[in-house]
Image 1 (cartoon, rainbow, N blue to C red):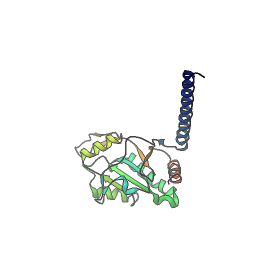
Image 2: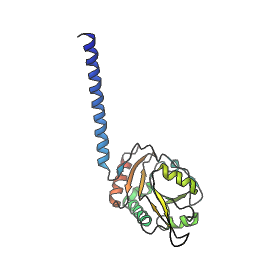
Image 3: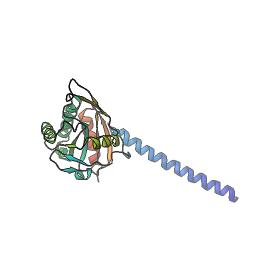
Length: 206
C-alpha cells in the first residue's frame, strides 16, 4: 500500500471509530432521556448554583444540600393556584418516596421579594412541609437569578398597587445528590411520575 492510501485508510478507520463512539454516546443519552418523565437537562450550562437567604435568615447555596435531591420552584406566596398546587404536589412526591422522602429537599424561590417577607415565607412553607425552605434575595438579584435559570416572570397590575399578580414559569428544577442540574418537571406532572424520576436519580447516586 502506498503512503497516500495508507494515510487515507488510517483516516477512515479513525473517522469510523469516532462515529461509533458518537453513536454509542447518543444511544446512552437517548436511553437516559427515555428513562425520565421530566425533561432531561443533564449537562445544562445554566442553573449551576445560587446564593440566597432562607426564611430563617441563613445564607444558602447548592452545596448546603449535597447528598439530597433538590427540587426547586420559582413562585410567590400570593399566587392563587399554580404555586400552592406545585407545593402540594411536592409534598405528595416526598410522601411517595417513603423512607427516601427525607432525601428530598424542597426549595421555593420567591420572585416577589417586595411582599414576601421572611416571616410570610416561613409560614407558607410550614403550611406544606416544615422541612422545605423558602429562599429570597433583593429584587435586582432575583431578576438576575431568574435570567440565569431561564425563568420568566412579569408583574401584572391589580386594582391597587399592592394587589398585583405575577405571571411566571411553572415547573421545577431537580438536582441530583451531587448538586448537578438534571431535570425540569412540567407543571401538572403527576407526583407518581416525578417520584419515579427521583428514585432513578437516587439509584444512580454514587
